[in-house]
Length: 463
Image (cartoon, rainbow, N blue to C red; front, side, top):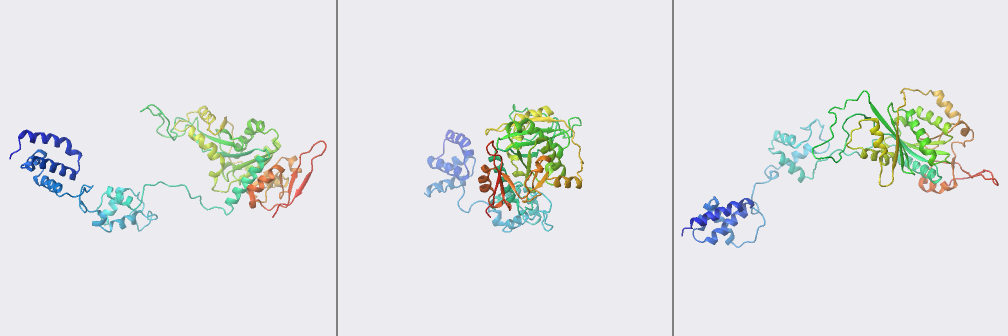
C-alpha cells in the first residue's frame, strides 16, 4: 500500500527538525519507529522523507523488534575506530620517550632544545614512523596523567646546614625583644621600578574595551629614571615605612631610611626604647658582608643612643623575611595594573596601602644622593671592633652582631653574655630552645629605684 504524499511531506519536515539533534543510533531508532507505525510501505516512505537508505531504516526496525536492552551508547561494543594505541602499540612508548623529565636537552632526544608543543611532538612521532595528529597526542598525554605545567619556584639552592637553626635563633631574639617592649623591624629594598607611563603587571576594573594606554617599549625615561622603595616593617605594630629613593640603592640609603623611620615613627611609638633589633636579608645593600652597612649602623647607634642588633637570614632565604609577605606583597597588589607615571603617584599608591588585618604604611620621597663605590678599609673595621662598638654574637657572628655608640661600648658586657629582661627570659627559652648558642651566664639588669639602685645578678643557662 502506497503512503500518501502529504504524510511523506509531514515526515520530512519532522525529520529535518529532529534528526540533527540525535546521534547515529538514535536517528536509526527514530526512523525505525516511524516506519513501524506506518505499516506496509513505511520503510520506503520513511527513507524517502529522511533522505537515507532503506537499509538504515530496516536496521532500525530490526533493532526495535529484537527487544534488547538499551545500550546507552551510540555504537555496539567494539564498534567505531580503534584507538591509535591499539593500532600502533609503540606510539605511547615513543611519546613518553620525548616528554619524560630529563629528555629535554638530552643529545639523544629527537627534541633536544625544542619546546614540547603538541605539534612538535606529533611531528617528531611522525618522523619516527608513528602517524598521529596533535589532538591525538594531547589525548595520549592525558591518558598517561600528563598536564600543562609551568615552573615551580621550590629549589632554594644549596642550603646552609644551620639554616633552620638561624631561623629559630632569629625567632628567639625577636620574641625576647618584643616581650621587653623593644622595637623589632624587618628591612629590605623592593625591586626597582621604572617611573613613567609603562605597563605595570596585574589588572583592575575598567569600562569594557578601554584599557589603560601605556608605552609600547619600556625604555627608561631619562628625566624620571627609576626609584627604589626601601621598606621598614614594624613586626609588632604591623606598621610599614617606605622611603622612595631616586638614587642608588646603597647601604647609606638603607640606613638613612631606618634613621628616618626612627625619627618619624619609631621613637614616638617606643619612647623608652634602648635597643633595636633589625632582621635583614643576607645580601644587597643590607648584606652581612657589606662593611658600609655596619659603619653606617654604628653611626646611627651613636646618634640615637640605641644598641642595634642585626640578625641576617641565611643566604637564599630572603623570601622568609617578614617584610616580603607582610608589606611588599600588599604594595604590589595595591598598585597592580596602574602605570607609575610620577614620583607623586608612587608615593600616593604606597601610602594608601591597607589590609583588613590593620596594616598601615607611611611613605615619603627621598631625593638624596647616595654614591656607589664607597670603600671601608680594613683598619676602619678593626677600629670598630676594637672599640667594642661592633660586637659579634657567639652564634654565627657573621650573621648576628650588635652595634653601639662609644659610650655604650664602654659599659657593654662581653660578647658571650646576653643582656635581657626577666620578662623576656621565659619567651627566649621557649622559642629558641636548644638553638641558643653556648652562653656562660645571663645578666639580668634590674630596674633601679631610689631605694634600690640598679644591680645585676647572673644565672647559668641549663645545658
